[in-house]
Image (cartoon, rainbow, N blue to C red; front, top):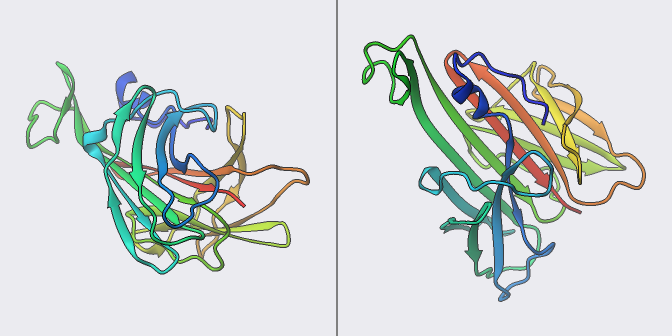
Length: 231
C-alpha cells in the first residue's frame, strides 16, 4: 500500500505503517477435520509475506460459520507468523488478528516504549494498532466481528460493498484501497460515505484473492486494518 507517511515525528515511527499486514489461510477452503495453517503476513507485495511482526503483540482467533470462536496461537516463522487451526466445521470462516503495539514516545534519546507518563521528556507520544480479517469464502451481509477498527465486505453482481468501522460504529471520510495479487501499491477506490461504505466494481478476469486496506489516525492514535477476501 502506498503509505501516507503519518506525522509520527521520527523515521522509526513512520516506518511502522510503511508496509501492510494481513491474515490468510494457506489453503483456499476450510473443511471440518482437516488441519489448516493460517498466516499473518507483513510486506509490500501482496500476497507475499516479507517479515514476521511481533508475535507477543498479536491475538488471533477464528469464527466458524456457526459463529463459534476458536482462539489460536501465532508463532514466528521466517518472514511470517503461523497459527494452526483444527476446524470443526466446513465452509466460510472468518480469520481475525489484532496487533496492539501500544504507546511509544519520541524523546531526545530516540523512540521509547510508553507514553508521556513513562517518558516525561517526550516531545510526542503515539499508539499504533493493526487489525485484519480474512474471509475464506463469500459471506452474505457480514457483521463486524467487534474489533477496534475493521472492514467488512460483501459481493453481489461483481460489485463489492465495503464498510469501515471504528469501535463498532461506521467511520466516514476514510480512504479504502484494494490490492490484487502481485501489486506493490494499493489502488484508491474512494472514501467512505456517511454510513461508512464504499463500493468497488471488480474488474473482469480478476482472480482470488484480493486485499482491501484502510489507514487513518485519530489524535495520537494510528490505525491500519485489512480485509482479505477469496471467492
